[in-house]
Image (cartoon, rainbow, N blue to C red; front, side, top):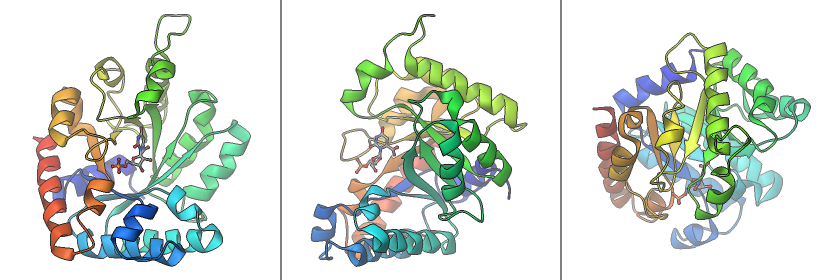
Amino acid sequence: MLPFAVRYYEIAARRSPLCVGIDPAPETLAAWDLPFSAEGARSFGLKLVEVTGERVGVFKPQIAFFERFGPAGFQALSDVMQAIADAGALCLSDVKRLDIDHTLVAYAGAWIGQDAGFPSDAITVGAYTGARALRPVVTRAAEHGAGIFVLTRSSNPEGLELQNARIADGRTIAEQIADEITAFNREVADEATGPVGAVIGATLDDAMPVLDRLPQSLILAPGIGAQGATISDVARRFGPHARRTLPAVSRQVAKAGPGGNALIDVVTKLTDEAARLLD
Ligand SMILES: O=C(O)c1cc(=O)[nH]c(=O)n1[C@@H]1O[C@H](COP(=O)(O)O)[C@@H](O)[C@H]1O
């Protein structure tokens, strides 16, 4: 399998850097006239991928909204992941895993690699147990051509105090995580862009010092639409790093549905805007 970044850049150039979230939230299922059940979540995901799958390069199922329905929800997630693969798009599973390294081996086996329970092209992870603890996931991602995105600066205001707190050497916690991400990429990747990306909210005005520490990372930027940011904000706020950024949108797309034409209209507008980040 080619490295995730290689596969991402290829599809971003051919389709768009846009990342469409698949978040079958209760209010979304109601608006789409779907039941609040695993079957509703499955129908929502399959329809979104069926209608927009030729235009979108990366889908991001948020597993919380599937896990909510227990085993049937996980089966629905698996079906949606297969549909993403069939559409020729990449699947970034939003699982936000974190733990000690021994347990992370199991999480890595669950989400990364052809023999995984839920084989994903990329996943999201957390670093509260220390970014260095992520080594088993980084290793497995590098071996299997997968990507990982480490939550570094979240899009929500509640994260600010913790993520901008300073450690003994004067760096913020987010800066320290960014440095560890870059150290991993230098260690495991020959390519300019390594397998370890970062999640940095599109809503943030002050992310540049962290972005500057991530020269070899893809950046996942949630917070567009429902949380108030726009793709133009990403271009303005992320400067030279916008070329490596996947702007992520969930509710803004879902709100346009369930009608197919409106969904295609909103996705076409957003994919066009996102494509300009590559200029
Ligand atoms: O990792 C994420 O994707 C994520 C990180 C973050 O800082 N903020 C954030 O909103 N997200 C996720 O991105 C999606 C945002 O959804 P919308 O606000 O509807 O576009 C949700 O699935 C969130 O769980």
